[in-house]
Image (cartoon, rainbow, N blue to C red; front, side, top):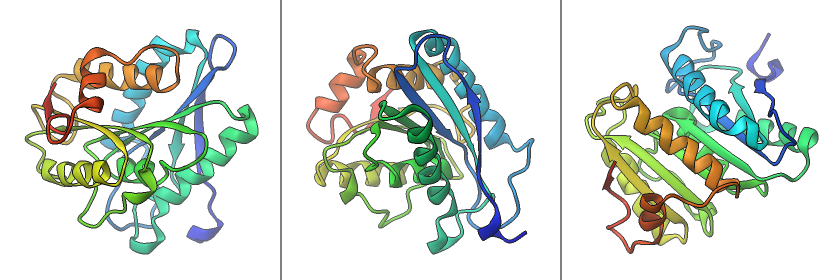
Length: 232
């Protein structure tokens, strides 16, 4: 089967109350590969854990969650396969749930994918975790959107300076941006509770189900560079 013939999949955890919002999760990958993602890949395992932490806090408040299962493991240059799969997922979410607010959460390559898809009409907020945002990554489509980023200061795979540059450019393009920094590297394995708590709170607030917590709200409202490199 060719890449074009493959179809992404969605791992779905339903809400335990009437559906009020949806969170879509996109895991990391690699620069170039047309092989399917490995089931035991750390990036997939890690994103499942983040999804599960949101389910524990938000399913009872009406938040459905979906984890995108990419067709292939790579971004693959202009094909931007992970971005295409996130767009596909957003269409499926609308088919199933109508025009409920959607919060996108992505790590690494998945962070790049959800940021690219942040202009979708259903998206209420985007949360990028150690996002892979190479120089020149587009930002203009995020004008008027709410974007929360977090990055490990010791990240050797995707240096934190990349999301710092992206955050500054997105802010200048008219996005409402907050960016936090944490100790540790790309796997988000140090201060796990801080990573999970930030995602949970962005999902709930972005969905309109809770107020923005004080540190995120302050960072979103701060003039740059104050809100773009906040220690968490």
